Length: 189
Image (tube, rainbow, N blue to C red; front, top):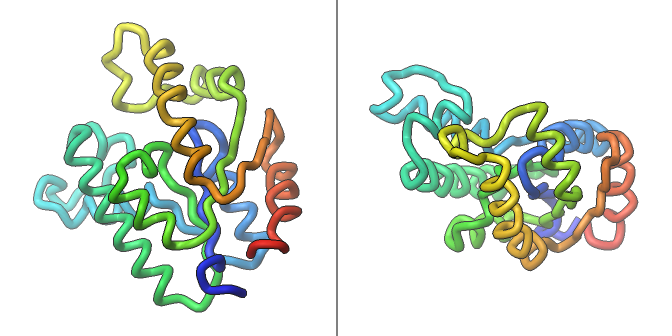
């Protein structure tokens, strides 16, 4: 494997299946699965604000607020890059939906490996969000669905610009999504 393409990073909007597809893809490739959200949760425990308490990703966002959360996400990206350089094994990495939005964080993450944008139509993403909940930062919004749609339209151009591969998943189930990704790997990974 070419070292710059040994690791697979999955990006996309909330609800596109990054973590679910990532776990299944890692199992199929006999690779290690890493979730950037989990790294953020683990790093938060070490912060004085945590009081040693382990919180979920959503709770960490609520506890820190947007700006401090993005700083922690940057630290998590640095940690991930160090981990990726230190291992000889392929990693399949699920990124947070906003991880590529900040240029400094994006630069670190893109250098780790091949970025796959899991593209799912907005109507499907919105349907999933109604089932699983909107992001924590929209909880106090008077119209979370409207803001969610606006956020999608702000983020998608960045996913499209910085992905090495765009994987059009439509409403594909996770196993079908893994098949689609695997079919694209040989030429680049």
